[in-house]
Image (cartoon, rainbow, N blue to C red):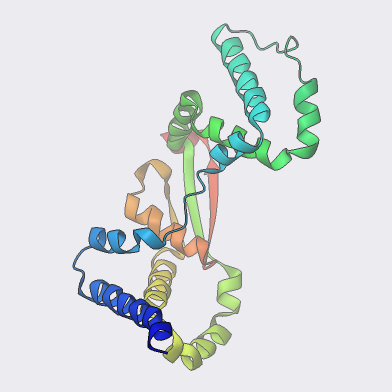
Length: 208
């Protein structure tokens, strides 16, 4: 009996030692070191996984992107010389993967980034309180009172931040170029929680 129970005793002792290290840790880096052996192996980014699963698809997208860039640099918008047949065949089976690959290339394209930055002068951001949030506020408030004891501290902080964002930016309008980082983060939090509704207006007059 003693020999059969010793492994469980060792395991329990190891668990207690780990718990003690967690409770007495004083920095995030120390916690990361403690949890490192228990973390699952990284799966990599979506594009890295696509490269592993469908390398020929990535090659096709890279070829298409390089062809479009070459034509743009040469001032030629005619892409009739590119063979889209293979890409069309892949589109039937890999539509979602193709969207991810193209989105990554668009997001990393310097010309696209420059165009977006230029548009900040012509773009005005409009923020309103979400109708969904307003209609459900009374019911959600009573529910939140009954469930408040079971909420974690982090969830309470998130709810408080959402309420603050809603109260501050429920009727907000500004040029995109004038918006501070903390304002963007607060509005994004409210939109993610469906408390705020965000729209954009493009107009040459806004640049004046």
